[in-house]
Image 1: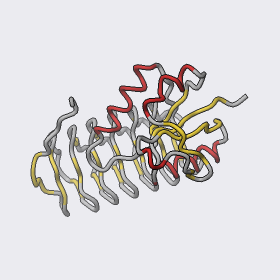
Image 2: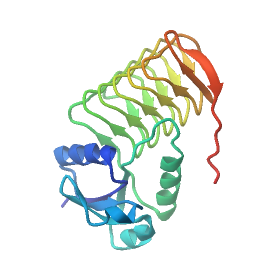
Image 3: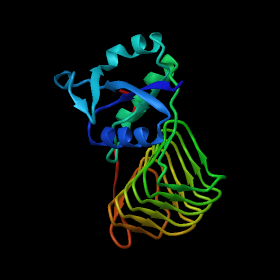
Image 4: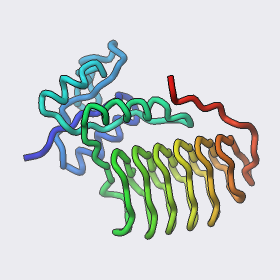
Length: 221
């Protein structure tokens, strides 16, 4: 018998998660959580938005133990971090969702709550942290270390032995050359080419990528 799962967040990213789950056929999607009450009882790909986050404990007590954070992040994953902390405190299980149309080497380590989208290639020796988004068509070469809450956006290329710190956003089509370290809480702009290490909280973009400013970070409130 398949386990039930709820999705936390309705929108475009949720639509892709639903399509992946339907193709995987591992779970029954019970419904979607969204705190915009105007969306209640609407549907995304025939899955009803029927809960808000106020219902999380009731959902858990009703026997649904699996949940997946199905809203995205654009450079500042604070909402995803807060949602993760809330659902972990309740005791939910967060499975990884890995597209059948991706290529993941057998020794790649992928932590809980992470999604691997179609067309992704991840080569040997790589570690992917918790609650990451590895988006469509991304190439992650051998021996990369991707920390928690990282979003590697569509079409990005990470060469061998790259490290990406927690909460960092690597933009669409960006390239990071081999043996580079990207710090925590950084933003790498779309289409950028990173040829030097990047300090924590840096916003960089361009070809080659250049430092533009430090990002203010507050995950406490």
